[in-house]
Image 1 (spheres, one colour):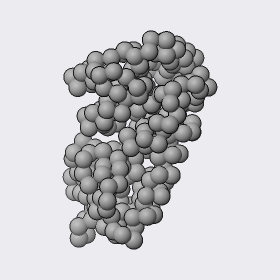
Image 2: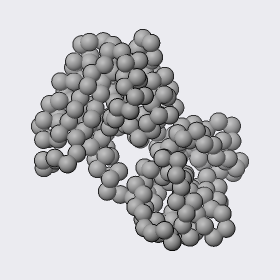
Image 3: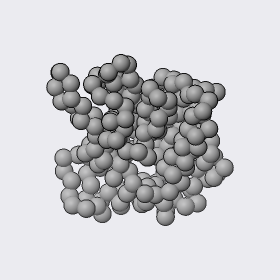
Length: 250
């Protein structure tokens, strides 16, 4: 990779075990320096301290969260962060690999067992960098009477149809109206991320938090109804997506 100066990676580590936090900080800093990527890496021993900073508007691209912590555990902290800043990439780290399946509920970018931190941190950081670059370079170009807008794919939560128009619901709680069909727009979206919920909806798997009964619960708090005929297939697609994104480097 070349040298990047227009953008700075903002990362944070939250782990109440000092030795583990220092270990992660050392390897993260070595990676950014080796790749000549401008960065800022903050370390927190208190999960509440990190949460207060985010709540006050502190921006981060990436968080490494231990799961077993005092005050707020990693899962509780992730749930709060996703309500406030859903675009932050979260990597869970834990000495207990049994947490990996529970972690799917919180849509982490990765899960790293502490026993494998040294070998997996570099893989995770490579994937994080590619993810952030893709967020800024890839998107859907929407055209309507108001003009043209490029919407990054990860900013699209879901798309729904009403008559001849489609409404693109975005992470910032705004929507874009375009005249098109769901079939046409689906051909311009990443097929491994966008799925049909039913004939009138396309949803971004990245923003799926859980399936509860016949409802798909999204990171924005919205819920989409799933028909019985689509339910089993969607559960399978979501599980595959979560597992692929959580366990392996890209």
